[in-house]
Length: 418
Image 1: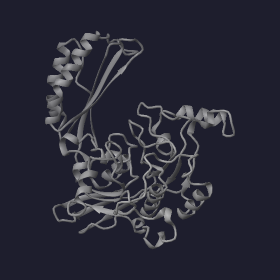
Image 2: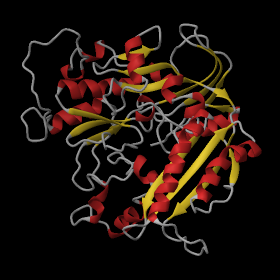
Image 3: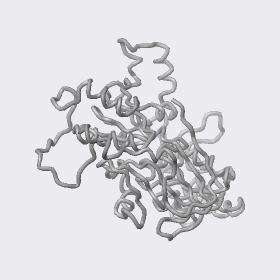
Image 4: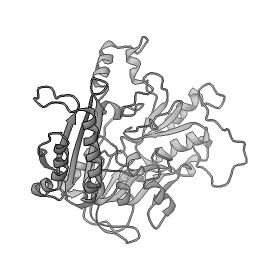
């Protein structure tokens, strides 16, 4: 399988159209005439009795091996049926001591997780190591997205959608399901002079496909000296649950959420139809997609590509703060008490509104250490479009408060980054 990431510069785009050539490949009504399992959904209410539960293997309604093989032919061979990653560690046909050791060594890494079809990136979750079974496949065109939605709906099979799999609740996986895996749906384009379909916006924009990840967006930013909203985690897919769940970033307090910047969306809805949604067309879907879906509260369709606002290059200054109830190994710094630790936390939280009002953001973590009272706090505070001197003046009140509590914190190390 070869994945091609497109970096395209378009001088002028005046109307919303297909963002990428592969989006022209769509399923037609004519193709479904002789194959009922891939027919589009109907807006007319059905009079047939409804089954409250989805079918699972062993049920009479579960497709036969012949049905799956026929469906795979319709998909052009894109249907996958992988084994759980952990199967290489258990006795049986798939056991491999070497592969098991490699798996264990890389289990916590995000790269292993997002390139595999049946795992979500852990994010603190360790679900379904060896019990998960599903039919999986890549998505390359909107035609295949329609085919899969139609097949799942017409056979009453559970459908799940996975982009990069960064899901705290594990909703990008599901037992006995047909999964739409959008990770390999790649394409990204810088639009220097984009006009939205209704004409309400003219300016820089970026079009990207469902499988584009944050690091690919960052590469485009560097190439064209622009800024647009991507996830803080470099491997996160930025058109899936990230965008549809709101989409926060280091620029959230400065520019807003990713969902606030969307100009147009192309998607496949539950009836298998391809739709274009913007403020002048399918406005209800356009509203719902921008923060109301992606497995958070519901999913309104499979996004294949989006167009989002871009801003001038916006550098930011960041610094870090750390304090702990246990001493740092190799350091002469003494540990603070648990009461002092929580007093320091209170001081930081009270400073939070000032960070937001300044257009900044603080990514912060509290994690336990080896003892029952062992706690460590770390935070990286970023401010956009500030000099180092401005940053130091801004952060000084917090540092003085922490030092007054007995938490010895020097001026944070500072750096300028994209």
